[in-house]
Structure formats: C-alpha cells, structure tokens
Length: 579
Ligand SMILES: Nc1ncnc2c1ncn2[C@@H]1O[C@H](COP(=O)(O)OP(=O)(O)OP(=O)(O)O)[C@@H](O)[C@H]1O
Ligand SMILES: [Mg+2]
Image (cartoon, rainbow, N blue to C red; front, side, top):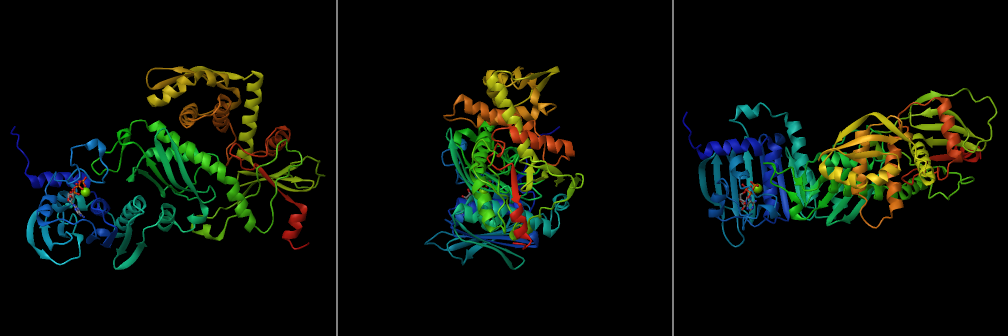
C-alpha cells in the first residue's frame, strides 16, 4: 500500500462533491459571497436552470487581482480574520466554494475595487486559461458555465432544467428573505422573474411567496432567555397542500432543520387539518455560542446547544400569536361576509371573546380551495326540534363540523375544538376536586427523548402526577410512563411527552403554577380529543352537543376561537332574499 498526498485539483473535485451538488448549490455559494462582500444589489441570470450558465453580478467590495487569484485557491478566505470559527457572522468561512465550483465548470471571475481597474480570470476545470484587464463597474461578476459537463458521475444525477430552475429559485428566495435590506433581480432564460427592492421583512416575504400573504399573515416578534424570534406565519385559513413554504433562518442564515417542521406542526396542531400546511418564514436570533454553524459542508444545517429551547420558543411564540390573532382575523373576514354568523351568548357562563367563521376568499384559489363533502347524514328532519340551545345533530360536514338544527337557527360545531375544550374542562374540574383519575399502564412504557426534554419532564413530574400522568426518569435520554390521565383513553404517549416537554420549555416567564398547569392540561386535552376528520355517529354528535351545553366556557376552544357558530333563521332568510 502506498499512501500519497492528493493533488490540489483532485482535492477540489472531492470538495465540489460535497459543496456543489447541483446548479442551485453553486448559485447559493456565489450569491452568499456577494452578500458577504457587502453588496446592496445582486443580479442573477440563469440559463436552462443554471445548467448552461449561472451569472451573478454584485456591487460589493470587489477584489484586486491578487485577491482574485487567492480566492480561487483552496482554504483561502477573508472571513476568519482571527481564527474564531465559533463566532462566524458571514455566510462563508470555509474558503472552498470558489475553487470547488471552478474545478467542475468553466468559471470567469471579473472584479473591480472602487478606484482601481477591473481584472478578469478565467479557469477551465481548475486550469487557468486567461487573465487580463476587464471593464466593469465596481463590484464582482462571476459566471459559471457548463457545470458538471465533464463530470459524468455528477451529470447523471442532475434533473431537468425545469427542476434545476425550481431549486435555483428556492435558493435565491431563501437568501433574499435572509437579507431584506439588499435588492435582487433574477432572470431565467432571458425572462425577468424577480425584481426586489430593499423592503421590510414582511413585505419581502410576501413578495417572494404570495402577495395575498400580506392580508393573511401574522407578524411574530417575541424573545425569551436571550433568544429572539421574528417573522411571519400564515393564518390557519391560508394554508397549502405541501409543506414547501416553510423557511427558517438562524442568525440570518437560511437553514434546513427538521425542528421547524415539528414546531410548526405543534403550533398549528388544532388549527389546521393534518394534511394542510402553514406558510412560515421565521428568523431566530441566537447568541453565537449557542449554535454551531460548522456542521455541514454546504452550511445549510446548524446545531443548537439546546434545540428544545428553540423549539419551545417557536411553539410558544406562534401559539401565542395565533391565539391573539384568531379573533381579529375572524372578525375581519366576517366583515366581508354577506351575512353575520353569530355565536349565541344566551347560556354562556362567560362572555365570548368573539365570533364568526372565516370565509374562503377569492385570492385563496391559488392555494387549494377547501372543499366540503357531506360525510354523515342524520334522519330526515321531520320530528319536532327539541329545545336544546345547540339543537339536534343533522349531519357532519368534511368529517370535521357537526351541523345541528336549533329552534332559532342552524348551528355548526367544530368537533375537535369543542371536544378538546370539554376534555380540558373535565380535567380542570377533577383537578380542583383532587380526583384526577389515572389509568395505570399494564406495561410501563419507555419513551426516548432528548436529554434536555427529559430534564424538563422530570422537573415537572409532581405537577404532571397531579394531572394523572405518572412518569419517572429512565436513564439520561428516556422516561418511564406508568400511568396516564384516564380522560385520554388510548393515546400516543411518545407524542404527548414530546409536546409536553416543548410546552414546558415554552412556559418560561412569570406564569403562575396554576396557569402552567392549565397549559399542560390543554396539551393533554388535545391528545385526548376527537380529531378533525373523524366520522361521528349521530348519537356521538348529540352527546357532544349536550355536554357542551352544560360545560362552562365551552363556546371557545383552548385557543380562544369559537367552537360553534349559529346562523339565525332571519339570516338564512336574508341569504335567500326573503327579507
Ligand atoms: N463576490 C465577491 N466579492 C468580493 N470578494 C469575494 C466575492 N466572492 C468571493 N470573494 C472572496 O473570495 C474568498 C473565497 O470565496 P469562497 O466562497 O471560496 O470562500 P468563503 O466565502 O470564504 O468560504 P465558503 O467556502 O464557506 O463559502 C472569500 O473569502 C472572499 O474574500
Ligand atoms: Mg463563499
């Protein structure tokens, strides 16, 4: 066996395999360099999804000829002046993007420092082919042609120009969201796709994702324990069939992290159907020592020192914002509705915060329209309607809403929201009487969790026991569950524990123990509730209505939204022009 040092060209090719997977990843690196160079304007031009060429022009600092030569050498970077890899503020720091791209393409680098002349260097698959003066405004122009043309192993894995273009667009979107203070243009095959001027973050996000978002989004701004979260999320009614418009930025760096997916799911848990997805662009600011950015060659992943705290911040912040905003949004939508849907207050023990249902508006068409298909039908409405305030169940719509006929109108109930509330109130009543029923598990269940989550659950073990959840520590990264609250019935214990840990992590701040218990109880209640999408029998529907009538606060769900709405007879008549 003979060990040899690899030649630099081969080293670059190997690095290119990690850093440059496809045109979009090369484009990302080049635009990041422009942003690191202090550009205020970045112009991107692509041909055939970047397969033919990628060109990026910026008005940043530029480089002199010596710097340009160095920039094309491996491990040459201007971004780590004091070797502090743990305090990186720039996008780049590895000093390998340009040499990697240059080793698998024909690359032309032109640059000019303010007050000096421009220079050009052309490299063909790692070999210098041309060098000389160039005429250009201050800044840098970089052109990459024929990416992977001579690397069949890579070429094979490239997709159609269309798919590569989509990936390039996504890369530009992420960076344009990360840097709303910079202007961008994007041209593809000679067509202008994007023109973005410096704008406030919500405007930038709406320009990039959907203009309708400006009317259907909630702004987020919260902070806890040195972490800050800002950004925009869509109202639950403004959702998509795919989770493709969910963006996370950590200290302005676009990252792909599964944490976001889970946190969004938890935050929207009862607000959105399981197969629907919100739109989100969230910006987390974390002290530099809390996050490691050097975990992935393409720098698209980060490692948090305490991922549960970040998840807790997102879940807590989003839930809070969604609660606050659910009424405002509903009321605003309602103003545009042809008739007023009202929630009756006649027997409510507490005044309702608000009422109304949201209406599917025209601009939501670009997203998938919500379709209602009748799923269950009760007996024909011939028997007299007994005078129950919430009426008699007549059917179920979209396996999610119960339609009931009351003496004075038509009632629609959100089955999950309503049931969740009932479970919560039941738990609360029992807790107050000190009679929480627990159901011992025949075989205790071991649930694996992150260590910090286990710490949180262990610290709350007494409170959880008071609610019927008996658990104890089982090694560093697991909990042993011996009993669950009886109201839960059969439940996914692992999911419950993960949600509870996130809930506890999100409950920092000056909340009283009682408030905390309520939050935790709400999380438990959600796990024990009838899901949206479950087909109910008529008897089940009526049982739910009767229980709602005798339960305090049942008119609003645990998130403050109405659990039911009523359309009075007079309103129905108005709808048909009879009045
Ligand atoms: N558009 C640009 N304007 C000014 N300087 C640039 C530009 N692009 C690259 N450079 C210079 O070239 C150097 C090398 O760039 P390269 O992308 O290879 O490495 P990096 O950005 O330092 O680190 P990374 O590999 O993590 O991206 C940079 O450190 C920077 O000094
Ligand atoms: Mg770079």
